[in-house]
Image (cartoon, rainbow, N blue to C red; front, side, top):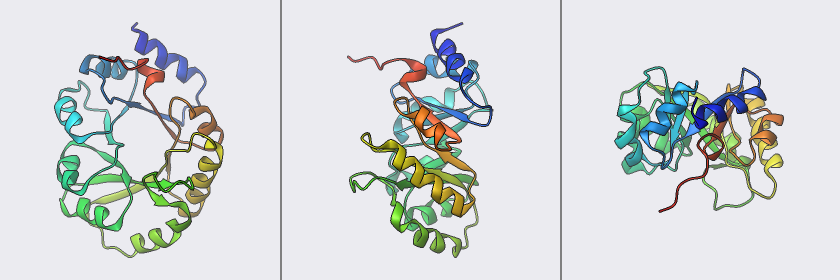
Length: 208
């Protein structure tokens, strides 16, 4: 068993079966990604469209869902829709409609900024109700809205996770994608259904 697969087993020991693990594959090699998949990972995520374009066609398992988890620029949206099964970082009506226009059935998760810091991407948590009301009025043909995601502030992750959970309770969406290698245990306590782990699975990134 590889170190990566051993890491996955150790993480799973402390997880309920209803929590999904997404392996963050940014800068990881194809061998590392396939090792994680062989260790039981069913969700993989990339931050950059170009990087996924180079690697994801060669992923060995057809059962793995490919998630986009970076900030999506509108000029990269078409290619993102081609490559990924899920886009986790939709944060505007304009982007939502653009994704829908490409004609491929795709899952979408809304990114919410649950921090007071306006430098974080996502729909401001205080404005989400109004945003979601507009979404429900759209005639979307290809998009399946499945959940919510956030990147918590480092100084108060629990409050951020609580805010996202409260939005989930109102929207009744299924997926709550929150928590990374440094704060996923808090996210689980606050109701996460999906955690996004990189270094916890693969180890520290190699520097040149």
